[in-house]
Length: 193
View 1: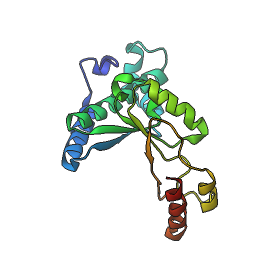
View 2: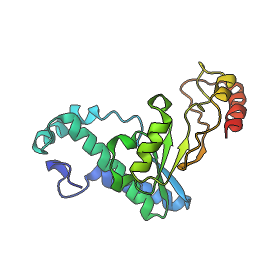
View 3: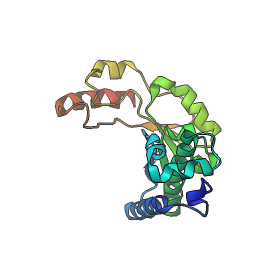
């Protein structure tokens, strides 16, 4: 991984620590799939960090944002490689498609949640990058207060696409604390599956 002067010899301490943690967790879980994340990363924090900001211009990148994206890609690669080394197939959030690194993504699964970008287009992009499958979560977020069970159901079945292996009804705590509302939407999501 050559991403800049501060880590030209290989992965930096953070990437090595991440790889060790993911490897240990994936091995302990003894599972076929291991979600390595990659979503909602605010890469701007690397560009703002005084210690890291100094390495960016020496790294040969035109902008600090390019350097930050390269750092994010290196961390994602470290996590994916660690999952594979433990015998698990890595699963990525769909933001990992933005980096477009076939070496990192090939053979993995993508979890699509950003439906506003167009699920068919994300699936086509995933196929072109060599991903083996997709899990669709778009439209099945149980904790969104602004969407009722009827709206979840109206979205219809999952896309009929060779990469789609299933779906996941997600429930995060930041939007809705009411379990009863989530359970009603869960039934609607199950109908979509």
